[in-house]
Image (cartoon, rainbow, N blue to C red; front, side):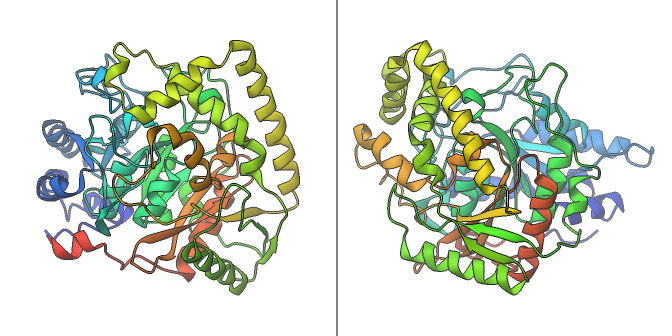
Length: 470
């Protein structure tokens, strides 16, 4: 047996288990011990499923050597506390659901289990996924592993923090306006928002937030994200969206040569200023793309400003559609969103969905001459815990300037990935976002993997890991 590295990539861990150099049970026990030690500092996990993890490990061991294909084969993972799990509490980050235990799993939870994954627990989320920081509600505040005074981001902050801190190699998140990409950017890991419909919401919903929201993978490498996407992807009969599947597995994209591409670049928005550290990191990332032989062309397009009214309304309606028994216990920021959503009439909502799709069509047509779009992931580096918004009643004014580059891909349904692209002056991660063509995850992953090779980050470790080494 070999010593376990908490930062071993998921695909490498899988291969060690397949060769029986590591046992699934010792992998589960290793990460559970690390979670027990570091989670009180980080607040990554809301619920730790130790018994389930050991049971998963034992079940996987019993299948080894029997010719059963297990794409994850002993790889630990987490689910966000918005994703239903049978027999395991799913709080949605809310006092209103503090003791909720779903009667059935989300289909993607079944897929991860059946692929041979080991469920470590449910990760922290702000209430109903309603903040771009993971705080408020009943989950612990997810702290940034690079500096615990700062937040991991939201709403998949617990998921991104656990991957960055080596509390598990892969994590499931959800993204309704940047909720995978923002935390991944803040924590210095890789996060993919897939195309609309690439992952099913079965059996509980057909779509979420008018098609804005989806689920997706978070990992430390592009290859691990692709491996997880292969497990998660695919519609269920009756789903409203069916994006075309690639001819080859997504995991093959990470090693597929990339031709010279024409890339659009957007570096500013009318919704607010860009932090100088973010701007510098983005320029450096664009330079790296040029060094790889790609054409990078600035484009006069501001999708965030074009979609602002639709995004604000549709996200608030998504929050307002959640049954809430006691509104007084709800986070004041989320309560403000709930109130805004309740004020919108059904006719206005239907019209805004149509406006969203029409505006999205205009944006995608403008981007059609390009192979992909480059933007900063967020306009600012991570924020201090408790600093955002400045007041609850200013949330819906201050939110959009921070996520201006993220939510447009939710409206258009395009796949979008964030990659580590640098650090702020105080050592906090900054991300590069690449938005692909509709249903174009394969080519997007290939380009992301090429960038990762040119600007490697696999040896970087956050301060929480350096100070609390296993």
